Amino acid sequence: MKKKTVLITGAVTGLGKKTVCQLAEQGYQLAINYRNSHEEAILLSKEIEEKFGNKIICIQGDVANQLDCTQMVEKVINEFNSLDIVIHNAGPYVHERKKISEYSFDEWNYIINGNLNAVFYLSKAIIPIMRERRWGRIITMGFDRVETSPGWIYRSAFAAAKTGLASLTRTIAMEEAANGITANMVSPGDIISHWKEKSIQEATFSESVPVGRHGTGEDISRVISFLVDEKSDFITGSIIPVTGGKDVLGKVCSQKNQSK
Image (cartoon, rainbow, N blue to C red; front, side):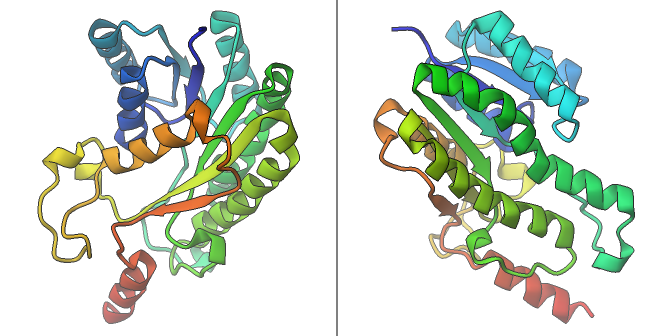
């Protein structure tokens, strides 16, 4: 059986890197996208090839740029002659707390392009390829309760983009179900940078999380690996929160209000 080919955007660090390692262990062929982290991408690809023997390529590109997205897909097809799974992990984010009136036009447009339009750019190129093979998996990334269109103080651009993406993910699922293509969104909870590349086994106690431990990158990568499996074809149009039961937005809002 021919190995499935996966394109993962923003794949060199954090949740993307953990997902790359998870899928590599399961035998997938991998195309890992990065924007600036060239050395880290090469190092990761060498580690995976040595450890698992997978075929893997590195592709530089900014998902917020339509031409870059088109070229990414072309490079994957030229190298593997297939593209079966796309994981939209990359997503620009402004860490500085800003009210909507404080965003520059460039900041706003870049966040919307990188988190919402990027999925359209890539889907425009990828879905026809998946239709030909009558099989495909599309995974997008959200945030806690994104499907309810919540307000998120100081995160207006990111929240607006991801809320739109939740609707787009479900629309793709409906439009492409007859073509053997599924589309689902995974919504990570409050997984801080230190834990994004960690395994569940490494997780330590946290009293702020109802399940009693910190969330890790493996918590997310395991869900993704399940959704892209051959036998997960009955799951499509779903938005799956992975939060450990933590009220992420409620905590964020209360902290912001207390700091005023």
